[in-house]
Length: 346
Image 1 (cartoon, one colour):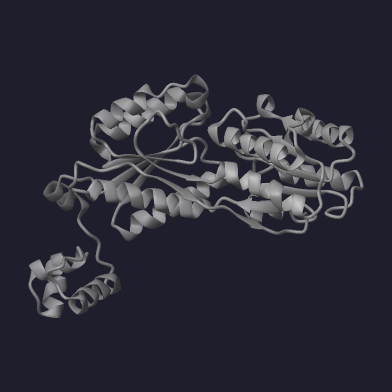
Image 2 (cartoon, rainbow, N blue to C red):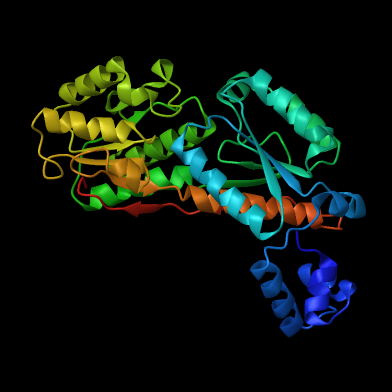
């Protein structure tokens, strides 16, 4: 294993210079920093994390708690977190709460016992439903930095990274109205979660603004049948049956917006089975990414949440807090804009 001393000898500089260059010190010229860092990369130099921890009183490790590790959205968030962590010399420890409050409490306590410098957290469904955030409050009182993402609560003061859930749905209704759609349905399996409530509220407000009223008959709530964690809804016969009945009961629907990543795919597949011409007679839009859109035919038009960017920005905020020497700062909530990416269903 290459050492600082060996790097210094190869470049005929002091060990101190190498150390400062690897830490991007202002005392070292940009030319020297680049030269040393390039050689370190070429020789596959790895920092001694134990020595660094002892010297800086840091673990150089971030803790991450997500609700469901099988959910593609959170897998992509993790990719963004890992990218930001690797770029700044941090490792990550990942726990999946499996939508359980008890597991979330246990894992948060483990991470807060000195194993990490800060925590990235997306709340479990049970935590949100029980409105129980005491365990998170206790961690913040220990001065352990926390950044919440996606599933958050306003009852905890910390940095947060979310998307424009309300506006994403509101603007999608507006876009469909401009295309001449006059009867738009809304399907959700996440209305009990904060993100689902925001999306539902966005649809409700848009319905009033563009059609003069909100019609509850145009909303299908699947929350009691599935928590939409991973792919379970895709194989749930009741979900398919209820979406099919919803479409048949509202046979003059000309658009559907799905609040989650698979309801849109199921809707488009069922509509195709019913010989409904898409998008001529029915436009369908759902949340997700390009891979999700490929699960349907025609390809689903998606509202992209940019999960990788959410993870990367959340990790950057956390690392910034960890390294901040200031005790007087204002917490921020950053909103990552969504984008609509056309398939052939709109």
